[in-house]
Image (cartoon, rainbow, N blue to C red; front, side, top):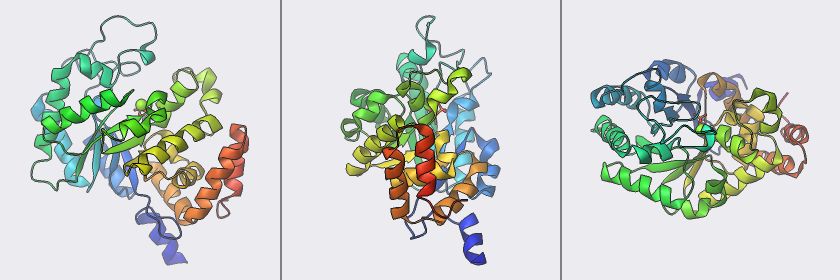
Length: 315
Ligand code: PEP
Ligand code: MG
């Protein structure tokens, strides 16, 4: 039992019955690589590339970008780089929206902003392609933030292909994209559920308004239902569907997400060991039962409690 516990503390993410759920790290740049490796991350599920650019008056040059991407790509067998998710809570001075916006979270941000500044997107994709040169073809996956529909997904995939990047995906963080994931699945290679923004937009609560945190609880059954629906559409279409929002860092939620059919979990590195242990202690069927129990509940606290009760090995 000791060896098993040690194994589950460091090995790849798996349920008790051996169903793989790769455990990946969310990072902001090369400075986070060591910590991710130390916590046993199997790869990077979300490289927030905009973090390289924050607090800078001028963008990184392509050479500087290539060096940063290369360092991360050399450290892990699989890396998902998200193209610049600027705007709203992460404004970049060289990527302004068209006008001052009363509600920046509902304005030009993420892919919307990159469509306004297409040369920035093209430069970033070019840098990514160069950084991946000579590495195995499946190492780099590129992902767009704030995609609303299949048309935007198609444009992003086309831009990736034009740069020679063969794995293009999108974040599901706009409710419309979750609702029509089956259309989008025809345009992309993979999905990642961004629970932070998906909760913000599903519950109509600005994620920066802390007095309303209660309304953004990821255990709310409306969000569980929407995630289940999107994951089913994605996986049903043969596309991977990870989760890279903070919800994945909760060991109980991680089991529920596995039970919903999610194919990988990405989170901040310190959360990986507890999530790994929770998965290793339960079968996929137990995770499915926990997901069903949570979705059958009517409130967030009942959902959390029901999921916990269905996962016997949790304290
Ligand atoms: C999210 O929205 O869930 C997400 C992972 O991206 P960010 O927190 O960077 O917006
Ligand atoms: Mg987001």
